[in-house]
Image 1 (cartoon, rainbow, N blue to C red):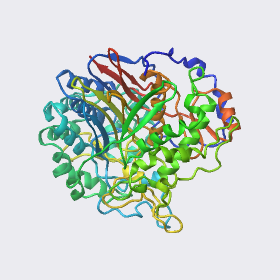
Image 2: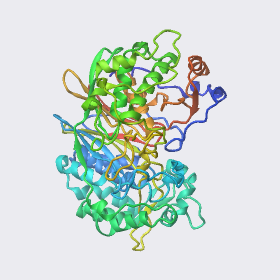
Image 3: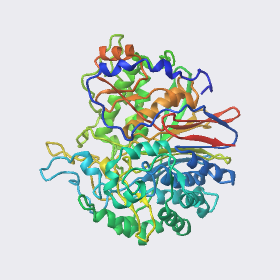
Image 4: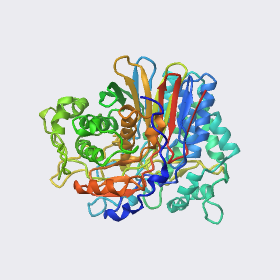
Amino acid sequence: MRPLLLAPLRLATLLAATSLCLLACTSPPPQPEGASGWVHKPGWATHTYAVAAANPLATQAGQQMLQKGGSAVDAAIAVQMVLALVEPQSSGLGGGAFLLHFDGHRTQAFDGRESAPSGATPGLFLGPNGKPMAFNDAVVGGRSVGVPGTLRMLALAHRQHGRLPWSALFEPAIRLATMGFAISPRMATLLADEPALKADPVAAAYFFNPHGQPWPAGHVLRNPELAAVLTDIAQRGPDALMTGAVARSITSAVQHHSSNPGTLSEHDLATYSAVVREPLCFDYHAPIEQRDYRLCGMPPPSSGAIAIGQILGLLNHTPAATLPLQSGLPSGDWLHFYTEASRLAFADRAQFVADPDFVQPPAGDWNSLLDPNYLAERAGRIDNSPAAKAMPFAPAGQPGGLSVGYAPMPDQVEHGTSHISVVDAYGNALAMTTTIEGGWGAHLMVNRGQGLVGGFLLNNELTDFSFQPFDASGKPIANRVEPGKRPRSSMSPTLVFDKATGQLLASTGSPGGAFIIHFTAKTLVGMLNWGLNAQQAINLPNFGTLGGPLMLEDSRFAPATVLALQARGHTVVQAPLPSGLQAIERTETGYFGGADPRREGVVLGD
């Protein structure tokens, strides 16, 4: 990775593509969270440590822990607790997370993904007519709430890698919740477009004024209820959330929802366990930079590392491998091959990937989906000729030459999340993606009923399962709902290593539902193959497909690029694609971090 090779993108030249909407006739799929503008970020150089998070107050909390001699895990816990307060629409105590950790010698994958309650059934999201529910009908209320796993996962990581006392990590969030914080422009923008929150009395009393209007940007918001809960967790650990009064409040909110109750029980909360898994790692050769890397991500139930590994591997079998940026942007030819590779990767994702405690990997090993011979065979479906057209259909493959007994999962909306990257002064690094799934989760706010305003939101993570448990012939879908099962995720926290030396080179990841895969892959290609620094790679326009139309970030590509893609047979749709990327890379003098200009994050260090 070569820092600062290209001049910053000039947005004025990109805004000339205002006619793109006239070139597409397909409506864009709903995005995980609304867009809230673009704020230029310079990138930040640091010396011995760095923390990148989605809100400046959260980043500051992580920096404080590192200044006190804390570890990367200590910093991430402090960041997460503040995010629960200042970015409640994306993550918090009521959600789940994946944390990829490197201690200088080994990489671990901490799985704090939510799980289905013991009372969940495969038909959880089927209506009385036996058809899948409308997504919005399924989300709001208790039906969609999974057992939250973030706190138990963080406690497990802290026991292994923490350096500061557990209680100290909660001090910044408790102070902000008590004294108040100014609502950020992004939170205000999303709150103004969120009518469903008003239906929950606890959320309505907290997020809206007495006249039912959302609090504006700059309003000082206090959350004494969350401060009290965090104070108890700081003293007693995760049991303060997963048992006792808070657990009873969680289950009451879920089970007694007026129109869409769920089955989450106190037993489900008390018995949840975080899991340490082996990371899913793969080699990547960057043809332009001529360097070999080792990339590590989360294994299933995340689909992120597998899909990214497949996309990168497939691209190296196409002319895209050596195509440079054109005027600082991916070319139409490069986007064509990327789209074809993505369609093949997402077909495998829909066919195979689910909770490994419930579903066997194809050919007995998830790495079979990344086997070089398998990827070479899959790449044969991509037409590499100059006049290549889009594939009419992208089927799933047969890794190991074996067919499986699962039906592919139908396309379905995915949402949510926030991302944290940290490197500390001791040689530890992490990438953590954290979520309550959709913006504002299940639109349920938990309050213990002791007269304090506020609380925390619950996830709607169960909607990441397939609403349809079986296909028309009765064949089961791997990612169907089952009691205790963790829904498939797209979260893609990623650590990058030099293959020859094993030295850590970068940490990155993003929110964005299923588009997390594309946002992260774009950043990796930008840094590793196009020689961009972390900020420049993040700034690149977003793009991707979930198997249907090719989505391009609004006003970032020239009309000629869209016409060239359409000539190849792609349906192109322009839409806001508000990623929330964070990335930290190693440099000759320390570290350089980037934060997404589409959101409010910053990078801080020494």
